[in-house]
Length: 310
Image 1 (cartoon, helix red, strand yellow):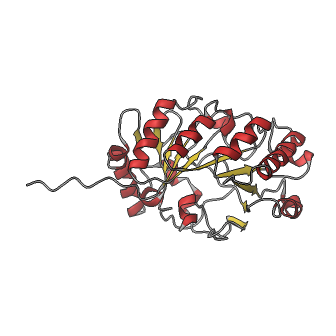
Image 2 (cartoon, rainbow, N blue to C red):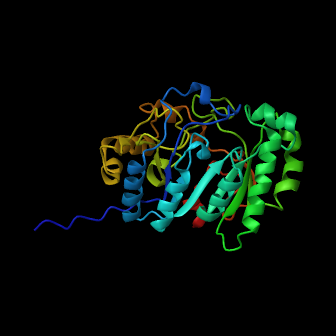
C-alpha cells in the first residue's frame, strides 16, 4: 500500500505578491533604471489562485508589495479585500505619494500594516532622494493617513515608518526620529543594500554564508507569476518557477528551488550570480541601525513579518 500523500505546508507563513512593478518615483537608492523586465500589473485571477493555494498550505500573512509603488496598482484594495476574506493579515509598502483621502480610508479599512518609506524631513533632501515626488504632498498624505486611522478606532492598521540612512540624509535622522517615533506604531532605520549588481551601498566582504531565504524565506512572486528567491531580485534574474503553469507545491519541490537550496547549503553560489553578488551573504552587524519593531534585532540583515511574529 502506498503511503498517504503528505499535505504541502509552507515553512514561512508569509507570502509576498508583487501587485505591480510600476512606480511613480525614481529614487536614488533603487536600481529601477537597470530593470529590464516588462512593467505590468498582476492578473486578479492569478492573484486569487496564489492566495487560495497559499491559505491551503498554511499562509497567514500576505505582503502585497515589491518593486513598485503599491498604489499604482488599480486592484490593490480588491486584492486586500480578497486576502482578508480568506483570513490573511494584509501588509503593504508605499512612498505615500498617492495617499489621497479615499485611498487613506480604504487603507485604514483593509490593511493590517503599512510601511511608509520617507527618507528625509526637508524638501531639499527629500526630493534629492525621492526623485519625481513632491515633499509637501507626501508630508500631507502621511498626516492624512494618521488622521484617517484616528477616525476609525476599530481599525487594525499599524503604521510603520522606515528610513534608509545614506550620506544624503544622515544629518536629518535625529529630526526624523523626533517627528515619527512618537506618531508611528514602529520605526526602523536601515542602511541600504546593494541589490546584488544594482547599487554599491554595502561592499562585499569576507566569507559568504547563506542568508537562509531558500530554506525559510517567504514565497516571493513577481507581478507576472514568476517566483524568485527574494525581494532583492529586482530583474527576475533567478527564476525558480512560474505560477501560471505550476502549483506552489510544484515550485517549492521543483528543480529551481532544489538547485538553489543545494547551492546555499554548500556555500557555492557560482550557479546563481544574483546570489553570488548579494551583500546579504556577508555576516555583518551594521545594517539595521535602529528600530522599535517588536522582536526585530538591531544589526540584523533582514526581517520578515513571519519572523517578527515568533
